[in-house]
Image (cartoon, rainbow, N blue to C red; front, side, top):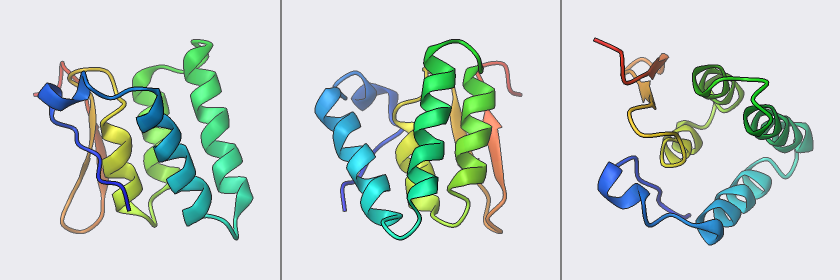
Length: 101
């Protein structure tokens, strides 16, 4: 499995290959549930088209991948600076923004 980071210092080195590897990780993880992969693509399309904000997109990903926290952690690497999905000890997920206290 590919490890991804939400470390801002390393985020700048992420590129197209990292995104493609992450997509392949999602596809292979949910090979028996292709609708999960398709829903993720829809989330990304909505974000790119500005139909959904970073917070809305992160919340949808957290919900979509709630059974695979490693995918949620991996997604953090692709969020804008200051945004991340924080996973609590009990598995609850919260979207953190630059304005979060």
